[in-house]
Image (tube, rainbow, N blue to C red):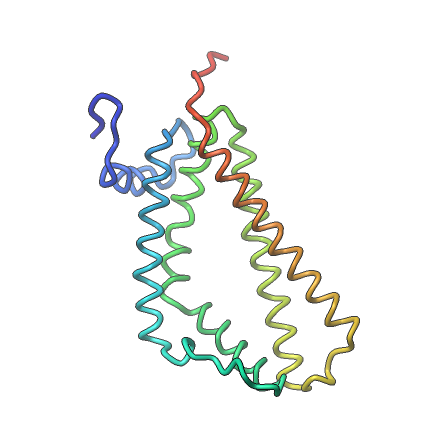
Length: 188
């Protein structure tokens, strides 16, 4: 597979699947970044498939001033994204991504526990943000704009913003960690 330390895109994808549950060992930068490229290409494909399955999601009515109607459309969009091809593929490939990131962090001399913590924070924040957004949208859809007080709306928005910032920080730290050069193996 590897000749003279070189890894190809195909090698990286093959290793991503064959080492999907291997949290030990190390993975070099090219293996990680080729896997990320593979995930990006796959995401383009699945998003295109989702656009054919749910064509109404492409053209949301953004000009509406009826808060309940907008909330209803957004709730439908969230529901469609939960049952999308993209979500299914991402869930199936989450474990290989976490395992690869743990190996890459170890190779870079960073703590593998940090990689795991970042994924828990990222996806935990995503889940809590999803539940928060769904609750907000269902309250507005059922009760209209009078269902939420201004302080509740601001608190919900601040919470969603905080979850978004947590995800951004996690992404930045994973990117920095994965970009680090290989460190010599420690002989503990």
